[in-house]
Length: 224
Ligand code: C5P
Image (cartoon, rainbow, N blue to C red; front, side, top):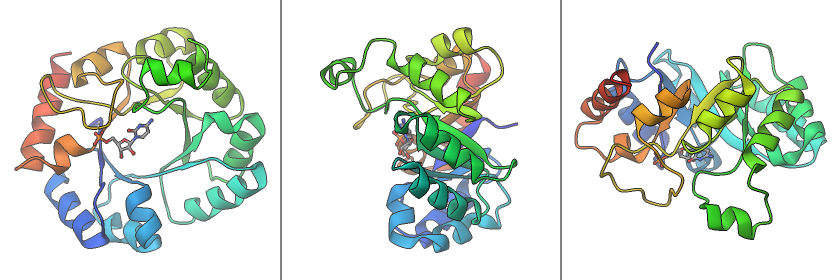
């Protein structure tokens, strides 16, 4: 299976379809995030459904349990294979999200955003082991997977074992621009540390040839 999840971070369904068309056969999952979903909702999902790749609806739900449960139910109705919620919403919120999803839809819990540096995390009052604590809480509450940065994936794999799906954004080949991401790593580092799926956005979207960029990431990963 191709472990790259392409983040379709583009403004409209036509652009998402055009990027996805270039990437089919070169990536394993298509991700629709907040930018596209807030602007276009269901049409964003429908624009890429017929590529027959699993769809990852990255809504990062975070609200009271009742609200998240209803939102997760609506998201599952769109046919997503993966849905995200923030682990920091707590046990009741994660289990409410899980209860609203069919078994075939995997709930992924976001720990701490990859755009936060260690200084931000400390300033927000989180302890040094916050990612591990959040991951454990979310798994105990029913999540099937965890979203974490390349910096924590090795620790999570060692501590949590082979069971949970570990999904890792903040992926950059050596020398690539980081943009707003801070806790980044290369595809090889993330895979060696135990990642199952790598989420890649700008390195594909902004490449002159997105398919060739995806193939380069797969090659780098395979040498891991
Ligand atoms: O462009 P880039 O490769 O940095 O995109 C990363 C993607 O992963 C974005 O769509 C972003 O919303 C998502 N993401 C993230 N950090 C998380 C969870 C999701 O960067 N913790």
